[in-house]
Image (cartoon, rainbow, N blue to C red; front, side, top):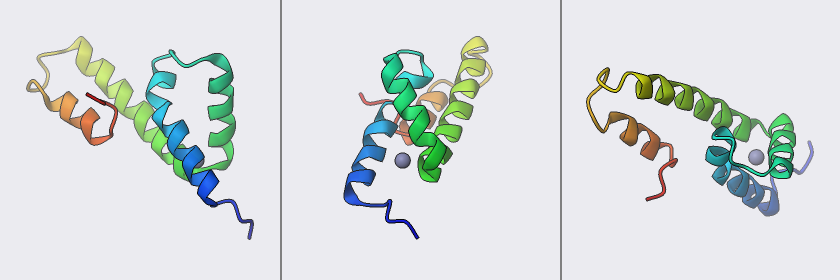
Length: 87
Ligand SMILES: [Zn+2]
């Protein structure tokens, strides 16, 4: 077994996960995008979060095109639950 789950690795995961929202919005710097993508290829935990996030964002954009499809505030609560809304 490799010893990849060090404290440093955990911190790195938290940093990268904090950038996922920017990444999904296409606002993340290109070198950070590459770093994130590289990390996702060998970090299962982050990959799961990333997959969930991208699905949620697709859902969010669908709802954004049909704002009357669901009651107001539902998508915001969904994003907040995933810690995508910081304020
Ligand atoms: Zn990770």
